Image 1: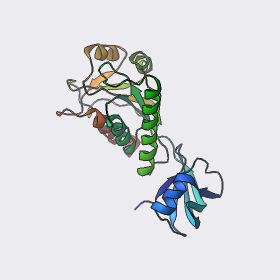
Image 2: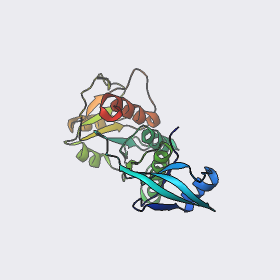
Image 3: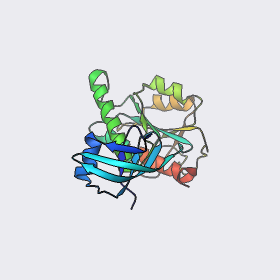
Image 4: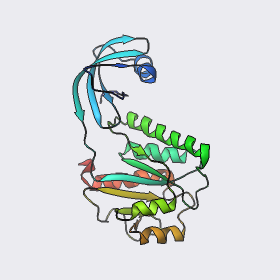
Length: 241
């Protein structure tokens, strides 16, 4: 079993302390012991392999035994996730994070039921970011995905231009399992909302350079399509080699 992982923003010192929520989780919930090996990560790619040397109330002191900066895998995968109602958007972020996505770009598609304008949008974006952080920790990732500010269709089209993009669409004739994939650079994976993509969105995205692909013969929910696509791409590139 892999070592437990906790988050720490600054891993530069030879001795570190976990305090606050992370210290409480390690000391009270996880109940680490003196002499136990644990990992600390900053969420930006640095992982420190540590030994627990002292315990206090909600405080854990550790000695760094080794430190490594894990490179970002290639190609860099960006999930363009249409906004979803309820907790389905957060589920999409959680699952995509667990399988290794590098960035999540929330997208206000035409058929999105929810809107992210104003304070409501800021609160929802904060939840997505918190979900990515916790899922990254749960899956022992040293590098957590970036959750960008939400994009309109016009902003998405500007990003698609000149960037390899795969548009997941149930009526596409090209299977994702057979399409050519880049070995480096950035690859966008676009997932529509529960109501599906409009014909206008499909025309605009494909005109900007996106290639419509399908996952398989069944229709996949917006909350799981992104993770499935990331897994397929990761298995067909060096990301999971």
